[in-house]
Image (cartoon, rainbow, N blue to C red; front, side, top):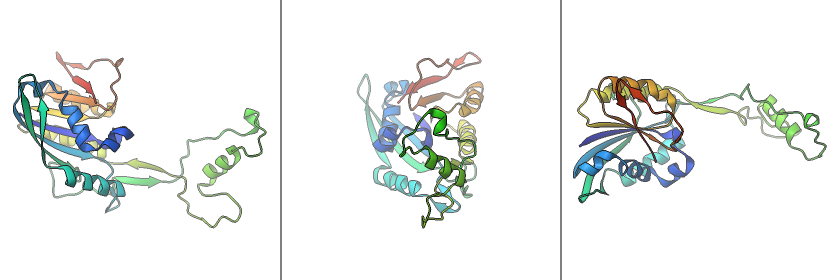
Length: 236
């Protein structure tokens, strides 16, 4: 059995990130119905995230890379109904499209200025008269984007900022389409982001075997059925 896993790293929960990539992959694979029918397999894993700030690797990407180098490649041994399934696992950070591996996609992590759609209620409007109430300071901090205290030596304009990932979701989507044209028995995406439903539906329409793994499965969500094919959805 030959499998590919695309992990939307930013969509993982903090405890899952803290447990490490090995834990995430093992937790997903052990729940795959196909594993119970196999004795050998290969699994190629790609992690998608904002790995570059400009053309420099972020601290997060460096930390995750160290984790990958320490633990992979490896052989995972998973119990089955009839014995043991041995799966050869490789992991890499997605720096480029699978279609064009020599061209890195930089600037995927970006710091933006202070958010313009956040508001802090006035102290008087909520009937608060506490002298140490933090609301007035929070309002000034959001309005200015830097420390509003008189005499503060910090003039950094990016104390209040938002970060965002760019190109990452579309890179993962393009790679899913690319992988579907290769000789894989199963494609697995680990993400609960509904932005990936269109490419997943496209793959199902083309007859690919797709499994979506949710970092936290919502039991009440509606099943995805496409042309008589039901998307297999499991939770970590």
